[in-house]
Image 1 (tube, rainbow, N blue to C red):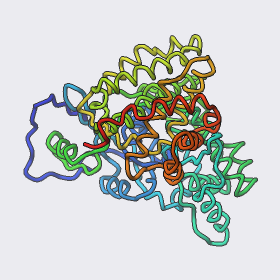
Image 2: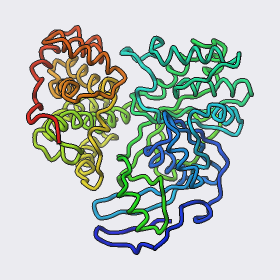
Image 3: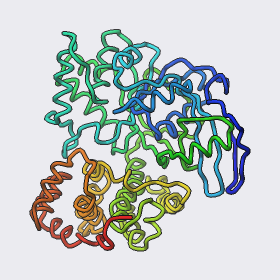
Length: 482
C-alpha cells in the first residue's frame, strides 16, 4: 500500500489508532533466506526495500539482527517486522509498508544468528555494520591488536569449553560461519553494504583475518565456500523523529513505532557471485556489474566525501544539517572544489567516465543535498571520521599529488576534520583517544600525528603537512555552535 500527500495536505486523524502488524495489514511471511547484520534505518530504507520490491519477494524473507542495542529489534518485532517507508520529496510525502523483514532479533542473540546462518536455506548475508566495525588499520588490514578484536578472539577460543560468545558484528559473523561449516550448510554470499572502497574485499579480508586467528581450518572453509560481493549503496536516510511518527499516524491511520524516512533517490550497484542464489533485486532497479570500483569511488568521493566536508566545515560555521551547510557559500565552494579534484581522477577510468555520468551525478547531488525536508544532521555524518576520511579524502589527495597537483581541496577536508576534533568536545570516533592525544601537541607535530592516523604516507610528506597546516582555521569563524 502506498499513500501520497502533498505539502500542506492534512489527513484525518482517527481517535484511536491500531498498531501496524500483519493482522492489520495482512502479509504472509516469506521464509528466511537472508540474514542481515546491522538492523537500522538505512538497511530498512535500502536492502530491505529492494527485497520487498523484488519480483520473487515471496521467496526471500530477511532475519535482521541489531548491532549494539536491542531496541530496534524489540520495536520491529512488536509489529511482525512491518514498518513504513516515508519517501520525502520536495512536493510531499508518500508512505509504503515494507514486509520483507520477517524476523527482527537482538544482535546479542548469537545462538539464533548461528542457527540461521547454518541453515541450508540461507543464501545471503548482508552487512550494514559501519566502516569502523571492520577494524581496519591504516594499511587496510584487520587490526588484530584492537582491544575488541583481542577480546573476541579470547571469547571465540573459549566457545568450545562453554565460554562466552563474541560481542562485535565481525566476531559474531565469524562465529556464525563456523556454525555453517559444522552443519555442512553449503556455500553462500556475504554482501557488504558499508561505505568502503572495494567493500567486498574489505569484508573478506576482515572475516578471513579473524577466522585465521581463531581456526585455520575455518579460514580455509570460508575461502572456499563464501563469496564476498562488493556493492555501492546510495540513499540518504536521516534519523526518524517524533514528528515523523506523527506524520505516519496522520496519513496512514495506524501507529508505527519504526517508520523510516528516506529521499526519493536510491541506487544499488553490485558485483560478485551468489552461489546459493539471490532475490531479483534488479526488478527494483538494482544494477549488476563486472567492475564496481568506479561506481564505488563515484559515491564515496562525490556523495560521502561532500558529506564529510560539510559535516566538519558546516558545524564549525554553526550549521546543523546538510541543507543548511550547502546554503553557506564557503561550504558550497569547498564542496565544488573537492568535486573538481575527485572528478579529475574518476574520469581517468577511461570509458567508465561516460558510464558514471559524473556531471549529471553532481547536479543530482546538489538537488538532493538542498532538499530541506530531509533533515540530514551533520553531527551524525561526522562520527568515525578517522575511518571515513581514509576512503573519502585520502585517495583523492594522493591521486592529485601523484599527478603533480596540490590536492588542496581534499587537504581542506582533512584540515576541517582536524579543526573540528578540537572544537567538538566529545569526539565519537574509534580513535578518539589517539586524536585527543595528538591534539595535545602543537604546530607541525600535531598535524603530522593526526595525519598518521589516516595514512602514514601522508604524515611523512612535509609538503602535505605544510599544506594542511596552512589550511587549518579556514572554517573556524564563527565558532562551532548553534
